[in-house]
Image (cartoon, rainbow, N blue to C red):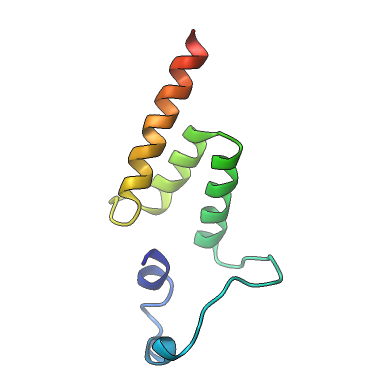
Length: 88
């Protein structure tokens, strides 16, 4: 939903043919759009248990919390838990 609303909405040709094509990740593993790079970095940070960093990155691309509200809420809990455990 985020990708279609933010990356594809301004391209009328793509919107017209989108129902007829299948979109898959690139096999080249090289992203060119800054927002996709940030999303990829968010996943890397989450895998590395850097919850606060991933939360900050996610908030940077979804300031109004329209797309990732549940993920933002869960990352907030994980970051608080991690901080509390670290303080013990």
